[in-house]
Length: 372
Image (cartoon, rainbow, N blue to C red):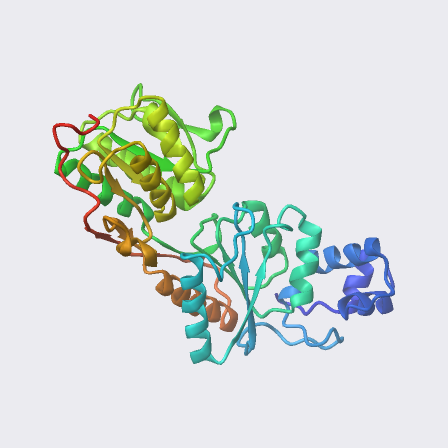
């Protein structure tokens, strides 16, 4: 910003007194909720939250070159009751963030915002009250959530997500899925089922055509999962294999969802000799369903996951999967955030980390008894 935003500017924009603005920005209780929201919205419109404020006073110092002491790790999830500390994927990202933060002498404050992301005013209030120098927005946050946070002017980096005009760090999801399916094809599999989700149910503009005259498949709501679905479809198309809607299931990204989705595939009588799951948790659930159906892994059905969470190498058989360097995601994201805090950058940078196919014992060439 060329000019510093003062309390008087905010008061004029909100139509209240400077004293009222001061009470709101210092979180005093003797202000109505409606007035509080009006002041916060006015401050956001004027760019006050990104002005390097100190204690809500008239004198402000610019954000450029400032020293940050605290950043936020704000977590969004579609799955109810999901927390970072208990999740085998997100917990490693948080560990990477914390490791890098210790080196930079920065405090990391964790907050789950899934339950408030649909309420921009409440989200804005939460962001202001936390008084953060920068934000890592982790997980599949909606675009409206990203835009609401950007209104505060607080430096922001997305982790494992992508929204245009926003800095982000994520793995190479499309190429990882492509490698996984190409590996299954190289083993001789021709009917390869896919498990992703949660799927969109919107009208045709939320769907995409798969090649000339190809089937119209529902898109995945989560950006990274949709990229993995695209990798699956691309590998099939490049091998000259059909994309079959009947082999496309919504596993909800959970073990229970993977279990139920695999049961649906089997109950419909779908024929497949391999199953590619867009995350490892769904693969674990699918493994249970396949076993309950009397199928052998990998002789009857080969199984491949994605993420390489800790438990999958200890399964029977150990799971073939795509390894994502989860701690590196967190470390790279924090480095980018600290760079933005120190020197704002009009160019948005998306960092894509390499992934690696890890071949274990859950995939092999299809046997004559496999579900072709």
